[in-house]
Image (cartoon, rainbow over all chains, first blue to last red; front, top):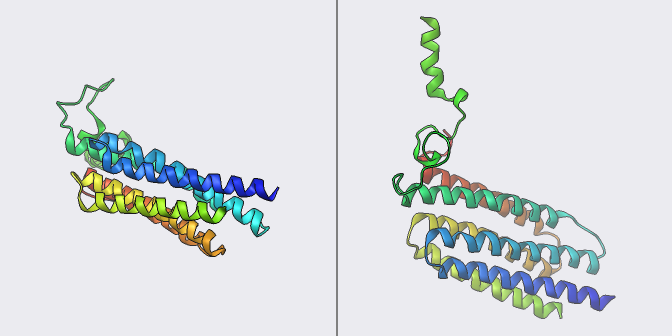
Length: 138
Length: 89
């Protein structure tokens, strides 16, 4: 049984190391900004997840107390990695792709990145409120 | 066996951090720098956890949690600043 846990922990550590290395190598190697976004957000996240699970199993087996801290960190990283990727890709679109180069989005309006007040929903816009309040007073 | 796997993983992540450092110093655009810093924070979490296994203490969890949180907030605020010229509007 001891050997089984050793093999499991070692395999998780090796998998984590390889995925982390591949993710960071992709950051250097891949040709343009949008493809470079793939490598760290997917491979590196998986690598860190494997390392954290290996750490959790190691502490449970070798020191005899199960801690769930690492699971918390793993879940946090798995939740936040897509959000950071989304934000960085939005910044990428904003910097490198002018509005006329992008295809027209479905529905009305332009891409959210290229419109001025896109980040707040319509009823809560400060500009809209300022416009509406004097009208009501008149 | 675990010792060798641990050394292998630490070597992999050291190399990964060097790649990230290269990308931070020599990047074609500012978003690549932000992405490299984000990856660096994630790899640093892995490094801290590996060092915790190496030392055999559970002292480093809090450091890794702090790194995860500050790394996320830093990346989002960098991206927001590039996108809107302001962090909290």
